[in-house]
Image (cartoon, rainbow, N blue to C red; front, side):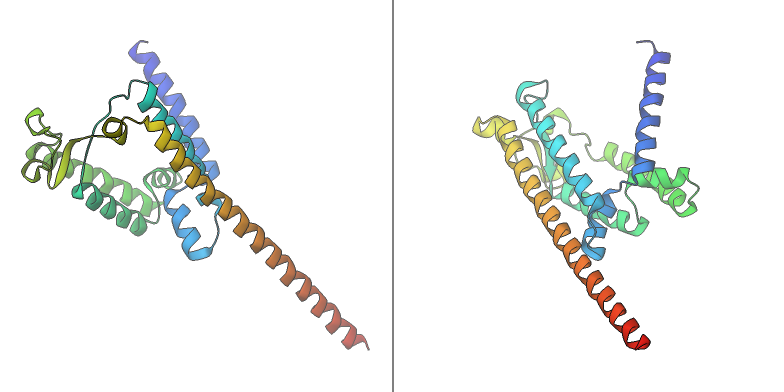
Length: 216
């Protein structure tokens, strides 16, 4: 494809994805926040379905596609980065995707969060270049290398490479666990619905009894 066609395809795909995100109000932050604080699971169920699809698709890609072999750079720095990112999402009240959506809708707070996301990415790019990020070939040892990777593993093996078992096998196990969580949420929602109907009936019964007592 020519650069113009590639830009048009990217614009079309981005527009469709943005429209779906805006209309669905999907947010990774809300998926966890609403489940913990408000006991509502609309976004949580959507996130679990997405995780199941991505897990099977990605591990299948690792097993039979161009993703085999696939190696990772992981370590304590990965967990530290994820933790800081999670704090940022909580303070912003949205994940990166919904921050874009809210900015497009005119939310000034989301606009500031988005601006400082870019600032943070720029600052990180300076650190990336200064501290062997991405890892140079000489740091690719497969062992802990604190000096080069901040307590991370360079070129860490996947379970597929280490055990000789296709990655999709582990992906299916994880997808099954996610599906079990999904089913558990559905059961909880059904129980909440039954409890809500019970309270509604009791309220209506008490209301009818009070009305009858007034008339008598």
